[in-house]
Image (tube, rainbow, N blue to C red):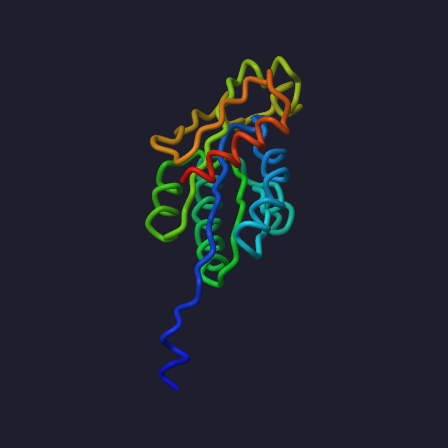
Length: 175
């Protein structure tokens, strides 16, 4: 019977992809998912927007965003503890959320998609930056940008997303 308990379950990896809305998080996450699945095994792709839809999360103020981020920590830990890799793309604007990920999840990889808000607005990628909407991270709410991400991808919208995905995969491989 003891032999069964000696084999510790393999933990999954958390690929926490953060950046401003419109920076390319979701697009790049979708593009790297087949690679992550093939390379590391069972993988779930989750976005902050998915979580909002599934759980009817309606608050966009700082307090709500922090509460959601801390809940996303718990979900990520729950899944990775079961050997499932998670690609979680979320604005993730709080250092405390990323710090908690590092302390809770052994196989944590923080990926920051760096984009200038002015470029995102100029490209018109996200309509949320138009009009009088409130609580927009980067405009109304100042984000706490990652202090020491494991990977930084600069998206200035001059490269196509396939090239950015290849760059991201190459950087993941080098970790």
